[in-house]
Image 1 (cartoon, rainbow, N blue to C red):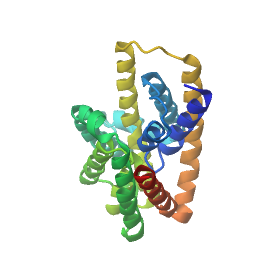
Image 2: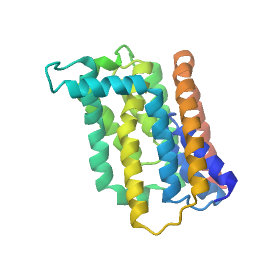
Image 3: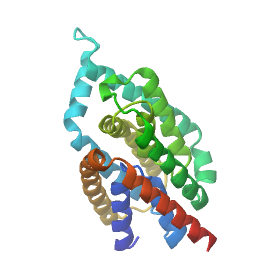
Image 4: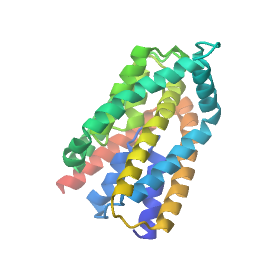
Length: 267
């Protein structure tokens, strides 16, 4: 990988992992459009580790509170709002871990092409616009119940099966449609990304350990650092932007990206 490819791919991963615009689509597109070679498993591990550390550090207080309350719920303290939220995050994660593992070969063979990306980018962008404009958005993150958590978790599976959907985009969309306010929908999406990214990173590490891929440590370190910085900044600014402007800027971006990709494919 050239230094330009390392920088671009790491920043793309960091900036798009938590925005509702699909990180997988942006990482697939360079090879489809620019003819870049696949970045390899080791680099995928590095950028995933960077984004994972970013979300954990940014939400370190919430993560610590949830974990502490969850473990204490097995003792005398019993159930609290934070421990219940921990259970809902676990429940929301299970569909992705189970269905994603069972259908991973389908995704690798059939779903990773630019036509699907262009279509899902537009379709789910319009769905995000509808949810942002029409949903009630009155519930907080602590008003999530098991049905809502499961529905958000099942929606996450769609993003795993069809690149361009956006994991964060579809989970936020579902949260909004279920009545969560913007901040709560975004925060739940970010928190439930932790076990999902950790699982993906573990899978990549397993592939790396059982393969024969040569590791470029300079690319690994630079990729991890850049994706961490980009992801942390992305979370910080995203939570501020949605309070003032809602999801509309990201809807516009998705529509332009999808239409631009269709134009390129038909050229």
